[in-house]
Length: 469
Image (cartoon, rainbow, N blue to C red; front, top):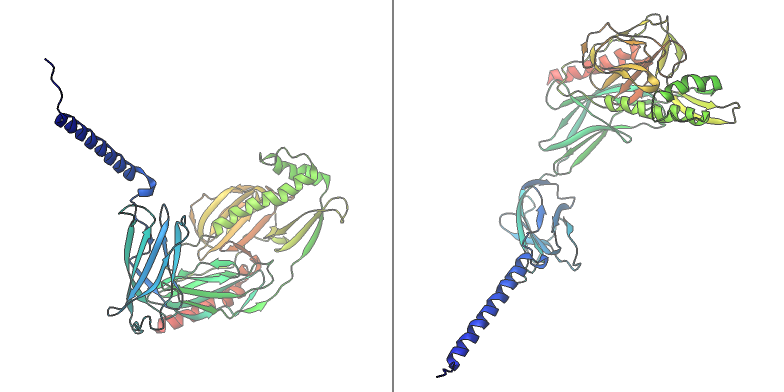
C-alpha cells in the first residue's frame, strides 16, 4: 500500500527551508556588516586636551579625524548661561579624513544670543560624525567637552641688566625677568638662532649669553615669551651694535701640502681614502671633513647645563704660557692651485692659533666639565670643556690629551700638550670659544677688562635689583 505525503508536510518542509534561507541571509548580512569597511564602528577622533587656554583673538584650533572619512561636525560654546553654535559643516568631500576646525570667538550675537564677554571660562562642545553606515546609516559620532580658560594678557618681560655693546663675532650677557601665571615658553632669539636661558638666583629671573656670528652682517637680539593662550611678548635687548671686518687670506695649495697633510687626513678616513685627484682631495678635506668635524663641536656646544645658577664667575683664559698669536679668528681663507685665478676651496678659521715651545702644556684657566677628548679630524686631538652658561672652549691639534671625558676639572688644570695633529703644519694650539654652538672671538674671553664690563658688572647690576625685591 502506498502512502502519499500530505500537502501539510510539504508546506511545513518548504517553510522550514525558507526560514533556513532567511536565517542564512541574516547571518550573512550580519557578517558583512561586522566585517565590511562601510560599516566600521570606530568613532572619529577629536584632538584636544580637556583643559586649555585661549586669548580669544586668535582662532581656537581643534583637529578632528577619522580612519574612513568625516561627514560633519558641530562646535558649541557655553558661558554657563547661554550656548551658541559657532561652527558647523556638512563635509562634501567623501574621502576627507582630517579637518582643523578654526573656532572664532563670537564677538556679536548669534541668533539673538550673546556670550558673557567678562566670563573667564567657557565650555566648548565638539561633535564629529563619520561616513560609516553603522547605526542605521547614521555613522559613528564622537563628542568631547573642553574647558577653555580665557587669558588675553601678554607675559611681562623686564630687562634687568645687559652688556652695553656687542661686537660682530663677539659675545654679550643679559639678565631678565619673565612673569606670567600660564607661561608656556620663553627664549632669547637672534636671527634664526635660539639661545636657551638659565634660571638665575630666584624663580622668574633668567640669564643668557648671546653671540653674534662673525660672518653675519646684522644682529638683533630679543627676549620672546609665550603663554598657554598664545599671547606673546617680544622685547628688544638694547645692545649697541659694533660691526667688525675680518681678515681675508689667499693660500696657495701646493702639491707638497696636498700630498702631505691633506693626503694623511684623507687616508685616515674611509670616506675620503680613495680620492686620487689632488684638487678633489683638498676640497673634500677642507670642506666636507671640516663640516663634519665642526658639527661635532656645534652639537656639543649647543647644550646648556640645567639647574638654577646662583653665581657665575669666569677668569680670563690664558691657555698657553708665553703663547704668541700665529693666526686670527674669523680669517676667511681662499685656497688656490698654481694661480690665484684658480680658486679651489674656501673655509673660515674659527679660533685663535697660538704657539710657544713644542709640546707645551695647555692649561684650562677656568674649571668645568670635559665633554670631548677624541681625535676630531682637521682639529686633531681635541679636548673640549663646558664652563657653564653655554660657554665652551676647544683645544685643537694636541699631541697628548691629559684629561678624561666627563671629568670635572678645576681652574689651572693641565689638559693637553700642543702638537700638530689634524690639519696643522707646525706645533701650535688652536684655541676656540663657543657660546651655545656659535664660535665667538677668543680675544674677548682672554681680556680681563672685557669680562669685568660685560659679565661681572652685568651680574652685579642684576643682583642689586633682585636682592632689593
